Image (cartoon, rainbow, N blue to C red; front, side, top):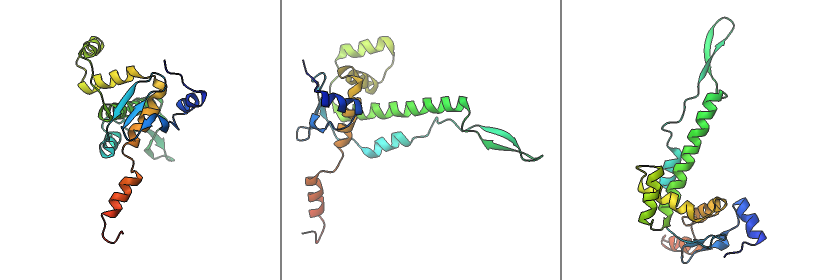
Length: 174
């Protein structure tokens, strides 16, 4: 049983300050609640940004007819409730695709075969990435997703050693 300190619990709720859960040399992150340790892999920020910026399927802003003193025109209506609902769903889908990418590309873990069979009962034809994502999310509470996400994104952040090595590679940097 893993006990979470009141300070760590508050940090979990806020999703910040949990760098002590990451072992940068081993590239691991450990859940303070379950004790589950994940082996982390660097992710491509370029690919993640591509996933987030893909606007396919984004709903178009509807227009309304407006009378300009006898002449009719159209203006965008971004407050249309049907549009706002569709936009919220689209944003949720983008967030879901991003989370699937982060957790599946950034965590080195094998999914047990019997877990795939379980998922197939509820989502026939689920992709390997979806199954891996579902498996990972069963291993930790949702309150820790932000902390794990921060740890995954931190794998791509420059380190002092990396900066020094890169700087040393430029002529005249000594």
